[in-house]
Image (tube, rainbow, N blue to C red; front, side, top):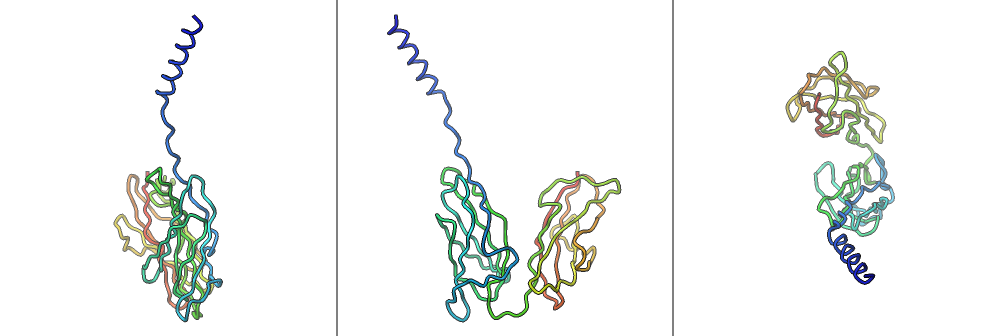
Length: 229
């Protein structure tokens, strides 16, 4: 009797274990960027000649991540460099005196989806004595965000910008229901970083901000969109 009971218990245990679903693989998490710092001039690169220096990028470790893909873009030429690392740093040769943006993608071979960090911008040190502004950072509304209008049928656009020369002069705000947005709706002084716009419910809008410095250099935020509910 006891043997029979043990046999039945063993069968039930095997049946339970056979029916139990395998746990889903956990996707990787995003890293926190550390260096080069956001909107800064990187002066620690190792010179490789008159035109190039080697810059070491650093970021925090991310859980459930097997490898990291560093992606660095020359914001003037659009040239992209990538390198895969199993550690939290990597080195790349970069043109001196140029502006770059960078991000890190966390990867795990058990899942198809990779996760990207924030995008940071910096200048690689060189002989340059004047700098174009860094691309404006959009604060609100975020990309593809759904928002509610206020009682005046308005929403607030807000952004931030930085310039190593501290000589930002104007912000040009482009806003329309078409992409790319070609309607320059207002030019604001450097003391402004937000404005209200009139909107219609159930409509998708596209917008961008161009920052211009005292020497006429400019940078573009890129196109963002949001939907008014």
